[in-house]
Image (cartoon, rainbow over all chains, first blue to last red; front, side):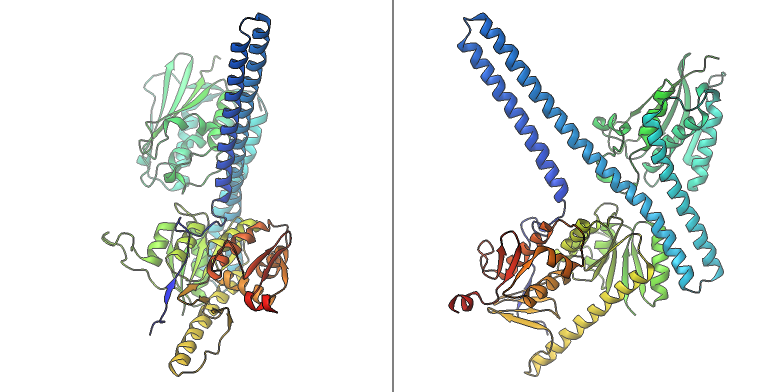
Length: 324
Length: 263
């Protein structure tokens, strides 16, 4: 028999738990951003209004008008710059926080998995096939751990140092072919999932640089395309020659796409597109930043093209053709 | 045999957890994202016409819930379950082990919280603890029902005050007209305040004694729990009579404010 009273659960108007910590950090950050924006715009408005008043009141006295214009322009410019600086700092802190969260997750998850399997093996009788499977999973986890550590280290190097080694002539076609093969085999993808279309031109795509860094850049672009492809991976990789001085690697996926406003930001350090469909994709927000740093070091550039959500993305890595 | 739902998107962890929980004799189901977890637990009550969906949720004895999940995160899932009156014991797992994250987990409705990387024996012991508590709670409810049917008094852990009864066994707060289901941590905090009734308790001591956190935690997190408890036990939460704030120190619980005034 059910209890003769009404069972209820009281929550506030949000339908969830009232005033608790859920999203507190984000909400307070947004509030701070909006407050700084309103304060900055308000103060700049006041400065402009006072300046205009000064000019109107003293319009007959040229020297006073001149000094007033200079003074209030300086104050307004200072306020605008200060507001921009504060907003940038808030955004940078947000990105830094999300990076710390992502790296924490990317480091702790494989460690947790390895410890779980080691403690299981230590604690229980495990049949031979399962034991082998556990070893395989642990090795995968060490690879993942190593990948994250290497990415963080590479981001540090890419962000601070100039040339790391004496440049050598690199056959981009061979290098891309190796990277495509590695990306496919690493994720167990069939050949048609990542297609490498041969260059039409007869000449070889030779560039000058550090082969290891170029390999990292190409691998990161490919990994990114695979990660954001969703369930069906369908990627085409091409090497083109926009002109006789440049070689361009184009990696096109048919995945989640990038909103136009985010096309440049995805190459910033720690930046990850704040999109619901991407929340399941784990990453540190460093992959494309490393690609951009390597491209710059080699005198090239990287950019993304996309029509927006759900339309796929093309990442173009342009490098100067070797002059040797 | 207990039925446990693992909500985790990391396949390696799922395999290891499933292996161990099955070895302990539990039956295990897995949800790889927040939506699937809610579908398992609540059914598709939000969209009953949808094809291939469960019309109503399934009964689990405990949930092992990861925080960083695709779509809805673990905090949102716990909050939605509690909002839907689903009080299945939740053991939250997360890479974020800072004290404020732990409190956030409890605030969203989790019953226990374990930071990654965890020790396997600790995970199993904590899960066992939740299952045991669930069993006790069921036994307690059965005893109460049979006692009320036979005209006797329930023999479990209750605290009556000012026309209300806190039932720690059933995790309920019974008022004159309504009954509010408490989470385990809400009940623990109430139990602590009841045990110190009439005395001032500091926020720091609440953190240490109720949550077991002795680090330099932001003690204002406690205030959110207090706000919630006031909504449950006060006639007018903005002018509390039972749960008083002692400025700069913490709180004081007065079970019978009217009697206190006359004495």
